[in-house]
Image (cartoon, rainbow, N blue to C red; front, side, top):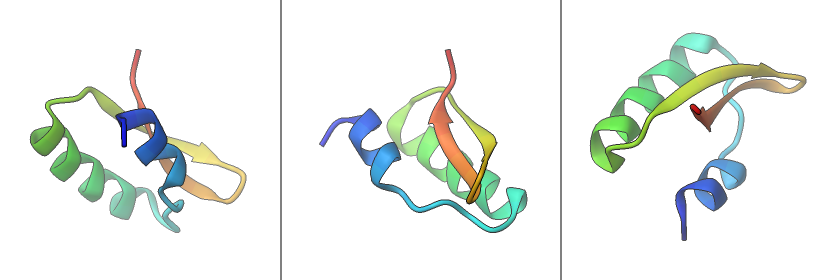
Length: 49
């Protein structure tokens, strides 16, 4: 599974803090540049460009 597929399959988070905590763990593990955005259904982790 590639990073984009994994991020698309991930649920949204109800709070920004939850999303940022997971994002930090994933960023270290995956050595990827990630960011958190607000979506219609909550907070989502996406690749930063």
